[in-house]
Length: 190
Image 1 (cartoon, rainbow, N blue to C red):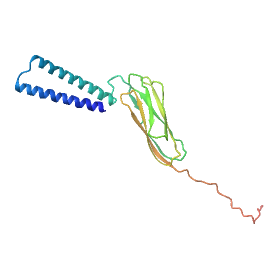
Image 2 (cartoon, helix red, strand yellow):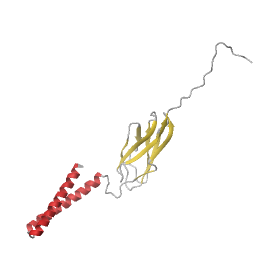
Image 3 (cartoon, rainbow, N blue to C red):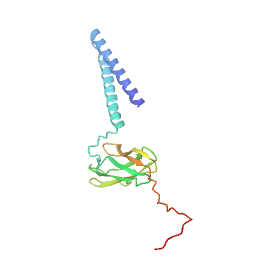
Image 4 (cartoon, rainbow, N blue to C red):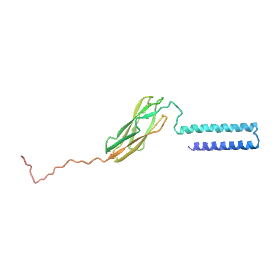
């Protein structure tokens, strides 16, 4: 990011100096052939820096220039567990399809905390194929669920954020009814 800012500052400085030289030379005299050549060379360098800057900007934003790049389409981006009991089943799946023209490679799938564990396919997903990302939430914690899972890949849009939400309620404390035993009485047979 610092290199990008420094490149931008250098580009602006060069363009101001070129413009200043052009305007001062136009008011005073026409440049000689050597001066014109140097001026043209500076303008070419400024143009090259602008191209390099635009390429590095598009790469830093994760926007590949490949029109055939994989495209990930998820069936859903949010899974709502609703309300569930503590120690319940915290598993869910996010189904996706590669609708691009090249194989999709999931490089990493990370959760926002350790209570959410994702599993993802390690092999490339060919165009038109589908697969799933499995997520398991540890339901021992009581309260609201609002977690994210970030999917990093070679797709046109990366990362993609998947969300899980819901509420974990405390396990109900039901006991078996106790028999009232009075040792002073004896059982009655009828």
